[in-house]
Amino acid sequence: MTENVVAADDGVDQSRRKFLTTATIATGAVGAVFAAVPFIASWQPSERAKALGAPTVLDISKLDPGQMTITSWRRSPIYVVRRTPEMLASLKGHDQLLKDPNSEDSDQPPYTKNVYRARKPEVLVLIGTCTHLGCLPKQHFAPHDPEIGAYWPGGFFCPCHGSRFDLSGRVFTGSPASINLRIPPYEFSNPNTLVVGLDETHKGAA
Image (cartoon, rainbow, N blue to C red; front, top):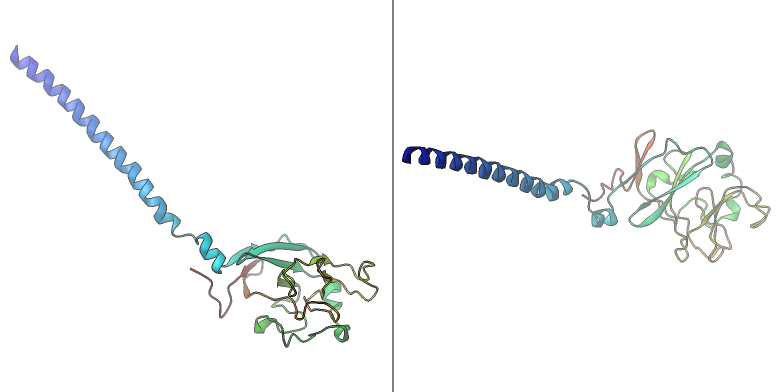
C-alpha cells in the first residue's frame, strides 16, 4: 500500500518538474527576445543621429521629368528636381540678372560648382530654405510666370519676402536673399538612388 502511494507521489513530482522546466525555458526565451530588442534597435540610426546628419536615402526612379519631390535631412527640407532638357537650357542667358551666377560666394560642394549646380545635370538637389530668413521657396517652374515677370526663366519664388531663384537655385538681383540656395553633400549609390548627407568627404552620422 505504501509503495503505491510513493509511486503516485513520484508521478506527481515528475509532472510538476516537467511543468516547471517548460515554464522556465519559455520565460527565458521571452526574456531573450526582449533583451535582444534594444540590441537589434541599436543597429538602426537613432532619431538623434538622423538629426545630426545620418544620410537620407531617396529612390528617384519614379520622379518624372519636370517634377519635384521633397525629403528631409538634418531636419531641413531637401528639394529634388528632375530637370527637363528645356529646364537645363533655361539656365543659360540670364547671368546678368543674378547676384552670384558662378556660385563664388555660395554654399555648395565643389562637385556642384557648375552652371547646373549638380553632379548630374538633370537632377537638382537643394536645401529648400530661403537664404534670407529661412522660409520655404515655392516652385514656379513655368517660364514667363505673370506673377513674377516676363523675364522669368522658371525657378523658385519665396512667398515671405519675394526672393527669387532660378532652376539651379541661383538668386536674382533685387532679392532680399544675398546668396544662392545651399546644396547639401550627396552622392548616387546607383543611378536611381540618391543619398543625401554622404559624399567623398561627408560620411554621415553613425
